[in-house]
Amino acid sequence: QRQEKIRNFSIIAHIDHGKSTLADRILEHTSALTQREMQDQMLDAMDLERERGITIKLNAVQLTYTAKDGEEYIFHLIDTPGHVDFTYEVSRSLAACEGALLIVDAAQGVEAQTLANVYLALDNDLEIIPVVNKIDLPSAEPDRVLQEVEDVIGLPKETAIPASAKNNIGIEDILEAVVDQVPPPPGDPQAPLQAMIFDSLYDPYRGVIVYFRVVEGGIRPGDKIRMMATEKDFEVQELGVFTPNPEARDELTVGDVGFLTASIKNVGDSRVGDTITHANRPAPEMLPGYKRMNPMVFCGLYPVDTNNYTGLREALEKLELNDSSLQYEPETSQALGFGFRCGFLGLLHMEIIQERIEREFNIELITTAPSVIYSVHLSEGETIYIDNPASMPEQQKISSVEEPFVRAEIMVPNDFVGPVMELCQKKRGVYSDMQYLDDKRVTIVYEIPLAEIVYDFFDTLKSSTKGYASFDYEMIGYRESSLVKMDILLNGDRIDALSVIVHRDSAYYRGKAIVEKLKELIPRQQFEVPVQASIGQKIIARSTIKAMRKNVLSKCYGGDVSRKRKLLEKQKEGKQRMKSVGNVEVPQEAFMSVLSMD
Ligand code: GTP
Image 1 (tube, rainbow, N blue to C red):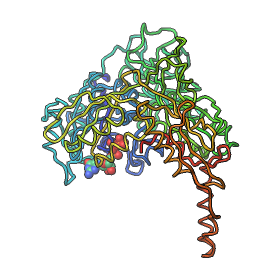
Image 2 (image 1 turned 90 degrees about the horizontal axis):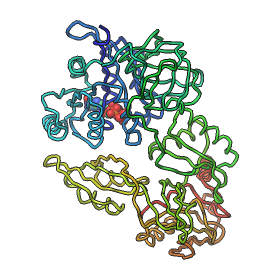
Image 3 (image 1 turned 30 degrees about the vertical axis):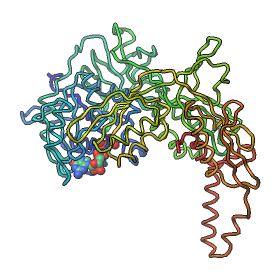
Image 4 (image 1 turned 180 degrees about the horizontal axis):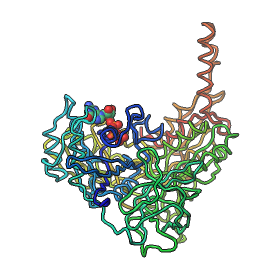
């Protein structure tokens, strides 16, 4: 029977351990993709992803595999994104599976995201097949890593498959293990339809393409369907699977993984985790685990050229079609003019959106420093939520402020315990736990304000551990902190886009660091510019940008023409990233500098 022959699985791994490479090998060993058709790293769809070498959007392919027992099996390989910002998407794509290949790099061993992914897989009751990849590397230590798999993850090392995705070693063993160990999908094809959405993608010609897994019942083109969370009804137009090219199907039933289109205008109507059912024969309840994704990190986006305001709005509208977790609303800044306050799942998500706006829509942006949402209790009893430091009420009106905290799990070699603890302490972290994985590595757990890690935490962590640390975090809720708003004044004017919320104890030190940094970053003007940091009416730090002495251009007098033109062009480029604030020219970096510590 067909249902017995289906195997639904994902590949989970820490970044760079070889997930995409293994997925490519699996594609080659299954349905007949010719080498020419086979683009490198088939599953990573967007250019940006390929450039950054990370997987953002998940996808699913249907493959057929003839096993050693002579039977033909249907594999659905579901791709998962590999970054902390997208944990919920990972958890939903795993919920569409019965098994997971857990890749561990034979040289690097188990990392923070390896563990985080294992927990997600266990939450979803998946059969986990460990694969120790990159055994071809001279630095590979498969025995040590196998022991780690057993000690840290708790999977018997005998079950792990040694492999090299690059050199095509161990691939058959992996495919056979999928057949033998991953259970076929349960479910009743006659039951009312329940299908889980694990991804969706906006296509300008067909509307939203919904990726789903049928859990109960079956679905056909022409069916009237209902999205249970959003309570919207649609009519199925196209139905099919990716092999990896899209192929139409007359019906998808229990255990099938595929796509549909139904003239859906906005991905917000088909949210990840939602359940699809039939409008005329609805399932009694939704599949478990639906969660609406809320943005965690906010920043202001302003066009460098004010004429691009409409263009920026259109860009955000287009991006939102494809990304239901992106939020934005118009915002006006005295300093920067008209722009948008935007909300993102995390820092990577924020960077990706900024980059896409600049690259795909050709709009240069000034972005303000990222902020979290603060919960502010007013003396009058009301509670307000603030995602922009500039809108923090006056100190006298506030009775207390709460900020979001995360539980950060950091894995490092023993030698780096000192620097990591020092960093976490500096970021107002509260020590929670430390565990030795073996005689070489340790997991350190801290509770840290999200605001402290949204900026340069990860970069600093990497550099202070020579790149050996891996990191993962989860939200643990709001806690009261002693926070104050610090304003920055240029030439006596308060610059709203530079306001920042800081801890009272470090306010003086931070204020000093920020004014010094701004003095460095803001070029000399025709006149002297005082830079000040203030809390309320009180100035706590001050420095001065001296006036320009001579015309800088006179320096490049003479020399050959092309060189001079290059210089001028370079200056022009540099200049585009400037914004006149009052009568002072301020470069992009200045807006970020309010978050730097030293
Ligand atoms: P993300 O998409 O960022 O999660 O990374 P990934 O886990 O998909 O890793 P990817 O497949 O992109 O591989 C990362 C790097 O490791 C690439 O440079 C691969 O060529 C290399 N790599 C993958 N498998 C092997 C292997 O078996 N041996 C060796 N030596 N290198 C490998």
